[in-house]
Image (tube, rainbow, N blue to C red; front, side, top):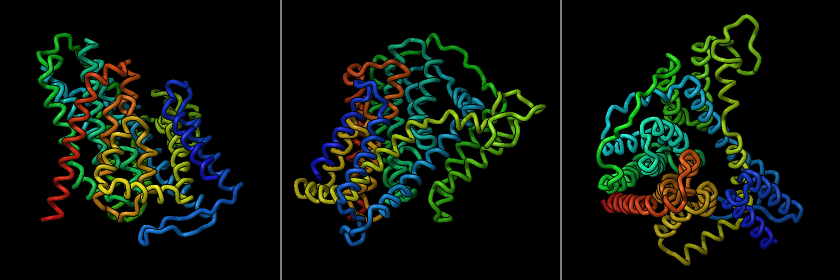
Length: 446
């Protein structure tokens, strides 16, 4: 029966990887795989276990209990992401991201390269690498009219955004997963992964600065419009500040991160409703007669909730519970033991995870690693996994959410990226990994 379980998982995984070829959204195989795996476990009465990290062993449990346990852990991540996505959409509702365009005051391509890379690095650490890429590629399309030049900039934005998301507990889905699962703490993650991530971004940018594409000036730059709403800048800084507040809330209260995110959402939503002059409600989609309708038929919060990417949420639900099925059967635990015997050096294993994340989705990779390893919280292994899974996806354009969305927005060819950008991402990944290992070993032997 375990063979059937593995076949179902691999078939679902393959369908997720080939979503562009099959023309089927990856949430469909993820949900189907999850449901089929748990159905097989239930119908076959297979024994399920809970991993005891402290004793490094498996403890028998009941299927209802273990499923509820994994659903609770998954729901923490999904509710957190829903809150973060809604805040980002509220900022966009007020055209807050247009404020960032005001930072662009140079025509030098090399300066623009550094400006966009630094903005991508910082923004992705706060609003996640996917959203940061969408915002910056949209601005890029306004700034640079020559498509060939723009493709180079988009490629570098992908590298910088993925590097920026790796060191922040709120910058990438995988780091958020590790943080919520208490594998890493916010301060320790930043302390150990920030410098390697900076190296991962700076090395490719330094090298790319020598290319012809980044020499000279932009001649056809257009005047950038101001935010459509006078509250755009206010909502941008309020929204970003509210998201950054979440790790501090968790540190002070020791409550799960989604509680802090819901508080942040409530605060941002309150100001959004006040500024929009809409009715003060997020539960009713219909405006009250006689009230101001100057910004649309819905309240800004209701409008933002309708725009969040629910397919992504359902994909995470499917893939996390599917991986949880393998973990509950003890497969990941035993696979980790076999892997450690075959490759005793965990650094090589984690770097292979990074390379693997360029080919297949990094969410299930990290979910699997959480079930494979039983190291304590803030063990260097978890920090290295956060770095590798976050930055390794830059090596192929389909290897990260940032790459896929840039590919769609700019129609970037897979092989163009492979030829021009992939090796820059590779040297950045290796340089950052080397920096991490040196820092870790220096601290251990200091």
